[in-house]
Amino acid sequence: MSTSVIILAAGKGTRMRSNLPKVLQPLAGRPLLGHVIETAKKLNAENIITIFGHAGNLVQQAFSHENIQWVEQKEQLGTGHAVKVTLPVLPTEGVSLILSGDVPCINPTTLEKLLSVSRETGIGLVTLTLDDATGYGRIVRHNNKIQAIVEHKDASDEQRQIKEINTGIYCVNNAKLHEWLPKISNENAQGEYYLTDIVAMAIEDGLEVASVEPELAFEVEGVNDRIQLAALEREFQRYQAQQLMKQGVHLIDPQRFDLRGELLVGQDVCIDINVIIEGHCEFGNNVQIGAGCIIKNTKIAAGTVVKPYSIFEDANVGENTAIGPFARLRPGTHLANEVHIGNFVEVKNSNIGLGSKANHFTYLGDAEVGAGSNIGAGTITCNYDGANKFKTIIGDHAFIGSNSSLVAPVVIANGATVGAGSTITRDVAENSLAVERSKQFSKENYQRPEKVNK
Image (cartoon, rainbow, N blue to C red; front, side):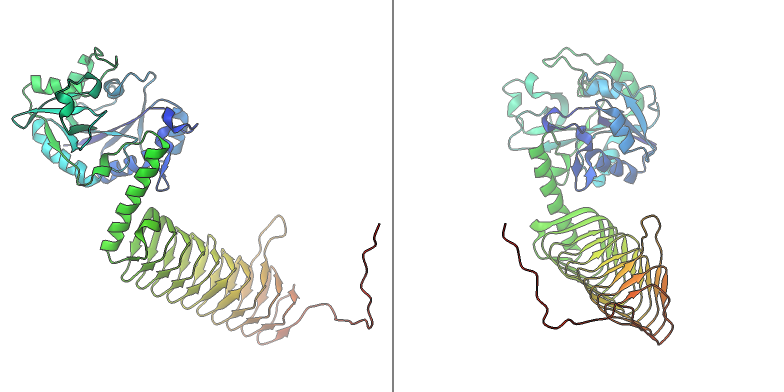
């Protein structure tokens, strides 16, 4: 049976105090709605129908790369009305999962369970038992079977004692949605069209309403303000940290670790405090990441040690390398095995060969460095003339003296040596020495200028 996913994402999010729609607020580096869309894709949904409203153009632009059917809810008249506006594009066959764009952490496993229990009954929902259910719609049962969902404002004193709540996540037969949604009324305390009314309609039709509870309560937590967003961020980060530790990762302090994307790991990976991982990253066996590092879209091979406060983006790092502290690898950096990149060294769009070293205060941009070469402190590749970028090529076993400027395009051949303080503007042949610096002169008995008092 085909599965559609309907995502409610039309709300403004007034309590966020932001010009950004609520569903675009970030959680773990991704918009709230982005998490829900990714979950839908993991379920192999045939249709992802997203309902937009406030600042809908921003929401659509943010996900223009996704295969989504967009439906506008011009007036926000309640959840029942929101789902009703999808009927012109909603298939009449199959089932639909109804999700909220501001409930980002629902686990695909929970939804798979919901799909399973709902297929026979035609309708099911995710519920949650809370110690304090104030403000939530209550699940009213008789003989353990769901009889109704009553919103808090419409509930009697007795019903308000119920601890099982509605999370707003449903699985419903599409044919039934087409039948029930046009019948929903707004005769209630809020004057809105409640989606919960379809539960009463299902019972009137003699259907049993199935239900599941999530394994973890935070899966169904919604976000309405900055306080809730921050609290959910920490819960989600704790969960991700626990998943990594179950895989064998040694997190020095899981409370001070942030994963804003996906991390694939080998064995015996160690990550110190205040590290931020973004995008898609891969760490091989025995990789060590020092405190305060930020690593984005980067692969780091086995045995590499990254010292504190280093920043990587779109880089590829070989085995047994040593990097940092305070190093920066920019997009297009490829380090071979056993490379050393030291403190305050920046590498951009460059390939650094086996065993080569740049240990101090160096910039290597648009460069090709061979194996076994040494780049002295203060060396820079002058790769940009203000309009175009040019390449510097350094061969195998070259030695670049400290404080050298290599003006690209230029080739430093295998085994060549560049004297310290040189500005190299021409190619250097194999196994030769190049020195290009101004002549030193001395002036005896030199008198320094003195400040004139006015």
